[in-house]
Every structure is written in C-alpha cells, then in structure tokens.
Image (tube, rainbow, N blue to C red; front, side, top):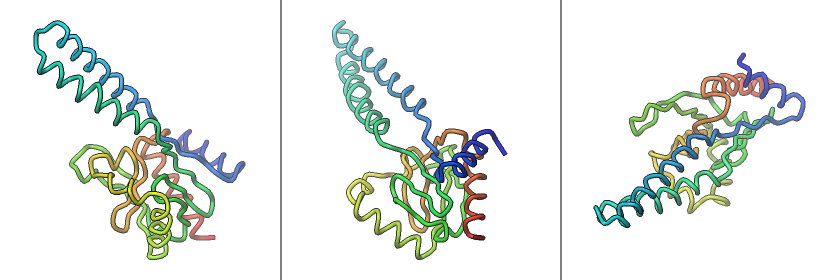
Length: 186
C-alpha cells in the first residue's frame, strides 16, 4: 500500500472520513502562463508592433484564461470517503452499496489522462440525480468532455472523480476499490 493510501486509511479509521483533494499546482502553473502571455500581449499593444496579436493574447490568455482557471481553482474539488459512502463535488453523497464497480478509463477526448469512474446501480443513479438536481442543474450543463477530468462529472451510469487527486491516480484507484469491497462485504 502506498504512503498516500496508508494516510487515507489511517484518516478513515481514526476520523471516520478521508479526504482526497485535488492537486491544484498544475492549475496555478497554467494561470501563471496565462498571465505571462497576457503581459506579452500588453507589451505588443504598447510597442505598436502587432496590435492584433497583442489584443488576441490579452483577450484569450489575460481575460478568458484567467477567468476560467481562476474559477477552477476556486471551486471545492474534494472527494470525501467514509466507510459507508462517498461524497463528490458533482453528485453529492452516494452509498457504497450503490456502486457496482470502480473502473479506470481513458479520457473520451483522446487525452492521455486516466479517469476513475464509479459505475452506479439504479439506486446510485437515483441518489446521484436527486442530489445533483438540487445543487447543480445549471452548472452540470457547462461540464464538457474536455474538462471532465479536471472537475469531475457524471455521464450515463458513471460518476467520474476529479482528475489530479493528491497522492496519485493509481493509489487512489486501488484504495477506493478496497474501501468499496469492505463496504459491500459488510
């Protein structure tokens, strides 16, 4: 068992809950890149060399990139794991008994990233949709396949966990499978 999985297991045993947070360092690195390209755009505008490319850089990176990445960085993206249930940002609380299996999938958009997908039973789908309906109806419409791995989303019979969980994808996958097996066996 990895160090991360041991820590999660210890937290679950001692506190009744383990929190798998999303590593935000990549988001902040992208944000810094947007600011750099935005600054280059401002320099291009002020120098008069290429105002079209300057405005494009300022609008695309400085404004849109900063707003989009700032929104992602500000959102709470944690997965809370308890012995009897899992709580995700987009689907709320799902009992472990409503999870049929936990899979690993490649991003549908052809990306290299792997996703952790919880396959839900009819009970899990009802619980997910009921909780989602209260909290996230409008917001879920904005989730696209391209940002599914970053934010966590729902699709068909699956519940996708946010990408970039601290501790590593494979450690989280194996630990979640073990928690699921124990909960279903109990």
